[in-house]
Image 1 (tube, rainbow, N blue to C red):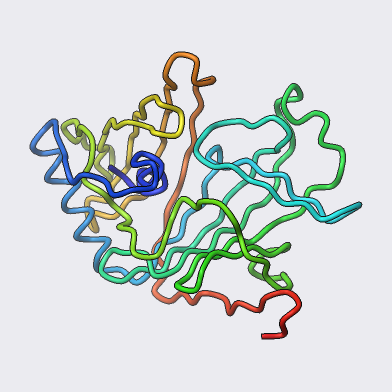
Image 2 (cartoon, rainbow, N blue to C red; image 1 turned 120 degrees about the vertical axis):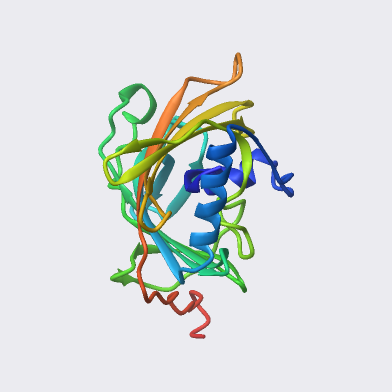
Amino acid sequence: MSLAGILAAWAVAGGGGIAQAAGGDANGISLARAVRIALARVPAESYEQTGFAYARSEQTPAPVFRWRWGGGPVAGMVPVREQATVGLREGRVTWWRDDLTPLPCVEASLCGEVAAAQVPVELLVEQSGAFYSYGSRTSHGCYGRLGGSTPLRVGDRTWTLFGDFAAPSAHGTTQLLKSSFPWGLTGGSASETASVSMRTHLPVREQTWISPAPGGGAPFSFTASFGYPSRARAPKVTLCGTGQ
């Protein structure tokens, strides 16, 4: 399972542990293992993603923030672009910061009635919990505690060997690694193509298509591109109303 799969991993298992199982082509499985080894050697990963999350984020006339991830378009919410950074230690999450930037409504039947101005929101998951703040990494205020589930949690692996892998194919300086796996949020399945650098074995880009189970909603897709900063630091959490 690729890195978009890391974001799906928690959902696939319904919030529990994922069985370490990989099937399909032996060369595909071998490349997936090489990716996991490569990710265990980097201190952080960044990604920009669209199509995975939808949100409602308003400060006037009254503050409101709701979001949903991994389930496709949501009535009453707008699509958002995610610009995230994941702190890593031996391939496991130490913290996760995700900036959500509202995008124009492209499906009027779902979000055409969202009249209030939508504002950016920063999400943060660290050892002490999950938080959100209106604004972005360059301009935000205090944090409130974030309820509900998040795609990434401290201690999660960023690459899980799960699902069926196809034989890799060369594409310029990358190898295309295709895989398929269950998508627990919609009861359907995911088909994913990851572009993996031949030099570093790190993911460069991914596209994931979700086919829901019958009656589970409409199909959807999301894309992600990745970077690997040599230094990254999680923001300090100051809870609203505490001054701490």
